[in-house]
Amino acid sequence: MPIKQNRKRLPCGRIRLVVDHKVEPSLQDLTDRLNNYLSKHRLKKSHSRLAIMDVIFRRVRHFSIPDLVQLVQIRRPDIAFATIYRSVPLFVSAGILKKSLSDDVGQSIYELDSEVHHDHIICKNCAEVFEFHSVPIESQLSKVAGSHGLSLVSHEHVLWVECDYFHQRESRHDSL
Image (tube, rainbow, N blue to C red; front, side):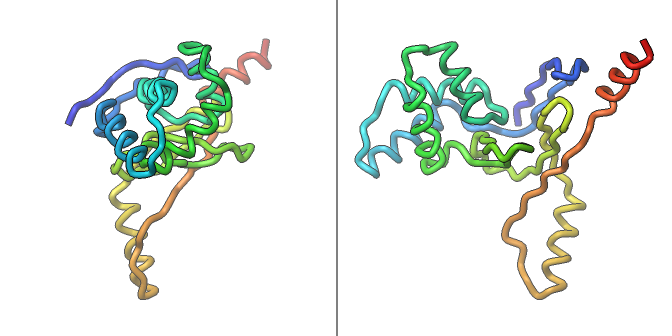
């Protein structure tokens, strides 16, 4: 299983070491999924959709449609906003993207549709989205469902947090 590792400066100012243990689909896998979906539904293949998907693939993390519009416009200003907005639901239907959560203002957040289950932690201060998977939590959820005579099919967790770093920085500025 490949491990990606890089550093990212968060909006709150701290540096986050990003270690990704997930196996994401390759760009070729995504292209194949899209082409199969388009053929099955007798839809046209377009260079714009492929360009949008390339931007998504390189982005890999969580994004809203306005975020995607901004990213696509940087790389491909010839692609219209409407094309981007229409492509996202198509990518969801094709199994390329999934709506993973909503932010604190109700805006849908998307990510690549991988088969690896995970839950989310979102910082209310810097808006960073962290992914986590906890075997003990998963096991406990199955036990809770079982105690009611039910089988757990799926679930979603979103933990809203405030990063301590932001508060420390804010209190330093207040004391100046």
